[in-house]
Each structure stands twice: as structure tokens, then as C-alpha cells.
Image (cartoon, rainbow, N blue to C red; front, side, top):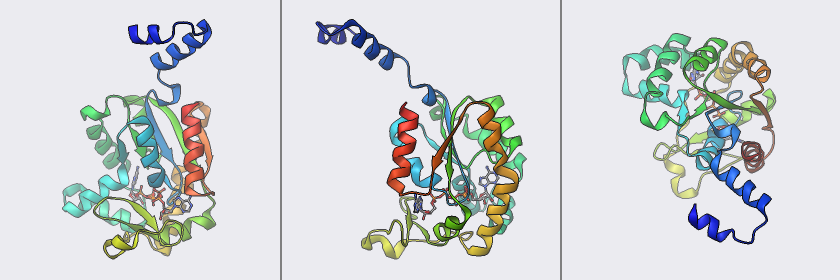
Length: 235
Ligand code: AP5
């Protein structure tokens, strides 16, 4: 603070206050946990990296946690696998237990970036009882764009990076190791979209009533979507 004071000698008093307030109080929308919300393939995982860089909050993706459980063959994974491969939501009690356990981690004390959670009103109510949500970023993309995005998605199993055969091609050097998710096929995507419209989309109104929803146009380039999100979170 002494360094700050000496470096501000001669600066207008109002400017000094603005600097002090900005440094002392974190931006309102980043105080607690942030929720990334949207249909399958909206770009939640893609945009998570930039938000993590901005906020330093850990990314908590229920999809990734479930896929890990499936690959380990754990009891949870065996229970979740059948729902995931069918494109249906995993039952609330399984997800709620998973999140409650994850939020006990030391790195979660300053809030986290939820990716793909909550997905039902029951999950959102449970979350409200255990954590503070300060912003819900709704990435909005029309259904007709979703199928092309999902079917062309490829993942790097070594880094977790997300690519797309057309919209975000991977470097040639790693193209041989890319994988495609089992549920990334046209018929499963249609079931996932129905689950989204029936069980998840009502959450937008639920969060809007609480003044937390930030609507983002997800039907533009990856960079432009990211810029729009960052400008809202930084305001
Ligand atoms: P999950 O893994 O969460 O899948 P999802 O919500 O269906 O979302 P995705 O991961 O498919 O898409 P995304 O929005 O992250 O898009 P991405 O950035 O990859 O869940 C899988 C399953 O687990 C569920 O079906 C369910 O069974 C279960 N589950 C998980 N959470 C649950 C919960 N809370 N409750 C119950 N069940 C749960 O982008 C997609 C593609 O598009 C990429 O190729 C990317 O490069 C490209 N792309 C991204 N942005 C753009 C852009 N602006 N323009 C062009 N292309 C773009």
C-alpha cells in the first residue's frame, strides 16, 4: 500500500479511489462460483479455458468427472455409463453427491467454474444450498448448429484440448491421437438436445429471476464468443 501511495503522489484523488476500490473489491460477477450453461456442443468446454485464465477458478465439469469414472470402471462410472451413452441425464442424486464431494477440495473455497452443472432445477436448488453462484453464463446456439459441432468434435486425450474438424482443426502433429466421444453421434445428440430442452433449459428462467443470467450469442466465432463472455465478467 505504501508503494501504491508513493506512486500515486500528484494523481487526482478520484482516480486514486477508483484504483483502490478496483484493487480491494473483486469484480461482483467473479465473487463466487460461475456456471457455464447451454445445450450440448454450445462451446462450454471450449470457453472454460479462457474463463479459468481470467478468474483462476478451477473448472468443474460433471461430464469430465463422469467420463473419468466410466474409464476407471468405478461403481459410479458403471451407474452413469448407460445414461451417458443413451444421451440421457444421469440421475440427480448421483450428480449431487459427486459435486458435494468435489466442493470439499481446498481449491474450491474461492468458488469454481461449473461446466455442465447444474442441469435440472433440483441440482440448482441443491447447489444454492451449498455454494454461492455469482454469474450464470448462458451460451445460446440454435439446434441446427449443434449437430454439426458435436459430430465434428475431436478431443486430445493427452491434454484434454477440444478441436473441431472444420471450425477448430487440430495441428497436424497431433491429429493421429485425437479421439471422438462415444456419445458424439447424430442420434445421441438428438436425445441430448431433447433432454436439454425438457430438463435443463427451464433453469435459464430460474437464474434470470435471480438476476444472475448473462445471455451470450454462441453462434459466432470461438474468439468472439470468448470476448463477449470476458467483457461481461470484467464489467
Ligand atoms: P457433458 O460432457 O457435459 O456434455 P454436454 O453438456 O452435452 O456438452 P458438451 O461437452 O457436448 O459440449 P460443450 O458445450 O462443452 O461444447 P464444446 O466446447 O466441447 O455431458 C455428457 C453427459 O454426461 C450428458 O449427456 C449426461 O449424460 C451426463 N451429465 C453431465 N453432467 C450432468 C449433470 N449435471 N446432470 C446429469 N447428467 C450429466 O464444443 C463442441 C464442439 O464445437 C467442439 O468441437 C468445438 O471445437 C466446437 N465449437 C465450440 N465453440 C464453437 C464456435 N463458437 N463456433 C464453431 N464451433 C465451435
